[in-house]
Length: 114
Image 1 (spheres, rainbow, N blue to C red):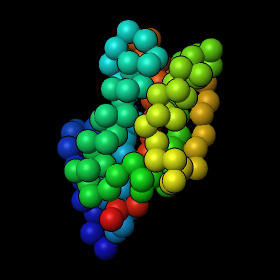
Image 2 (cartoon, one colour):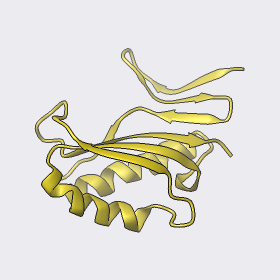
Image 3 (cartoon, rainbow, N blue to C red):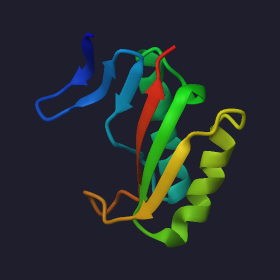
Image 4 (cartoon, rainbow, N blue to C red):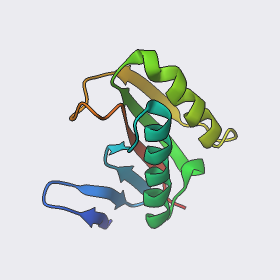
């Protein structure tokens, strides 16, 4: 079975496809607040999944890290409007210090390839 690495860098690939499974690297967003960062982050997830032959309807699992649980409601509002309600993934959401203080949210996705 082949392994395809998309948007390879010296440290990591933004997406890896192995068989019919797509693994995304942790994705963060841009913007001054949780809503804008979540929207930006999920747009990047959409882009990467499409480039790997998948979509948000094919997400198997999502691991979400938020810098402050006080912001999880704002993140969930954007997430709930974005996710395919007919195909919600398994999901975990935890509070964690992220790599840079300006990052409020990060997501790591595993999806099936169409």
